[in-house]
Length: 420
Length: 186
Image 1 (cartoon, each protein chain N blue to C red):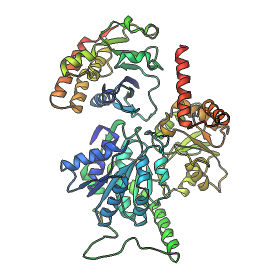
Image 2 (image 1 turned 90 degrees about the vertical axis):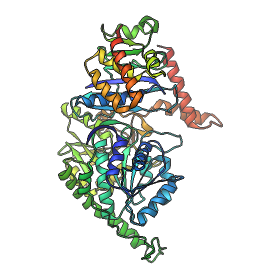
Image 3 (image 1 turned 180 degrees about the vertical axis):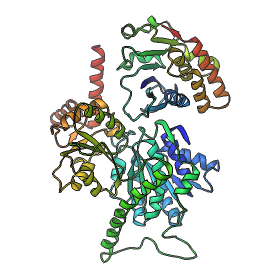
Image 4 (image 1 turned 135 degrees about the vertical axis):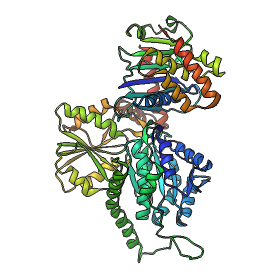
């Protein structure tokens, strides 16, 4: 039904329409409204006989999800930021055991410095945890992709994260056509688990595997993820046929065909980026956009095909591998290694720093002339960084930089106000 | 596209006001987006929320940088935060105050706005009278429908009834109607 609705509420309704049987979650900003909404619906009896488990922590949440999924129950949870880190051991267990749990990640920075705002540090910290990771650009996709995520998870017997930008999407009120129960029932078959813990037919899950077979088990995990590269577009096509909406899939081109420069990014920044690139094309520049919607598995071949005609690629991401640079950029470079395409890495929007049309345009005007340093830190206040580096060099016990930089910025603002 | 920035303080219903505006626009079959700019959510801290209303789907997710309308829920913010940043020269300003404009000491900002683009309403007083608590948001939404034809009062009332129920909804509707009638061009 078409509604003006908060992103989190739309996701909660979409998940409820998937008829989950167990939800175990611990609240953490900015995903809290999703599980609060689901808890409310479960309590009011609107989600069949679903059990909502109040657990003591994120570690408890994912552990409970593992137990319930292993018994063949359709299982859902959500987390963000530090919560993801706290459940991390169990996150690996879920994928290692091949359990089709669906988890929303309300993408948020990881501290310190403590920060509740959006970037992709949390789901990137679980990048190698062998979960499928799907990114969404807006709240319509957020609702739709959760429905596809349950289908995918259960078809592949793999857990799936749906990554949605915290606050920018989770807390935004927009128009969303929340998938109707009857349509979801048509799209999403009853869960037929590939393995079930059942006291009447006991099996062992989670065997210890030594050097004689570990590589083979890990190879199979990789192989199964690559198989999902076929399932994801097939499900997206079926979804579009049934719901009439283009949501999900591996990647999406927005005027990227035959452009000299293509921006590659993921998530909610796609909307603002489209607007900037439309302006740049009006100004005669050959520039388009490619949005990665399946980050794991990474669609290497499809990316190569989509970018075959490009001279340069500018990867814009809200994630940083400290000591290395862009994480998505490294993936894109590896995928394009055999093509004569220059790849520029841009890191921005960290900790919720606003990404605006103006600052994107300034960055891209340099990018199309190959004038960005490598990697480029978008909208970085270089003067603040220089002052802090100077201070660190000249003071014997300089103390923490986070507090020092806050004092520096507060001082600069006070001077600006007094000069008005 | 019509863009609104709402400035207030934690506890004044700034985010809820933005959400209700987007629901009101939806009720008129328009596309709308409400985005909060959360800080630490504590009572009294400056809070900002953004609204966009358009005939077409809205894809932008940047903060509202060049608002067509500023709604100021707490006039003490004039001297604490750069509220006028980006306000268009033909923009609108709606202030919650029972005082006269000259008393607010914002003459520079007022001077560049056209006549009949600055409105005041004693939203806190209306809220205290009808709700028993100083939540000025629904009064300001009612007043907004008086100063421009972007949204109708009835749509705001639809949004209030969507967000609240029972006596709270009923009394907020009274507040919105009263504010619609009481809003004054400065």
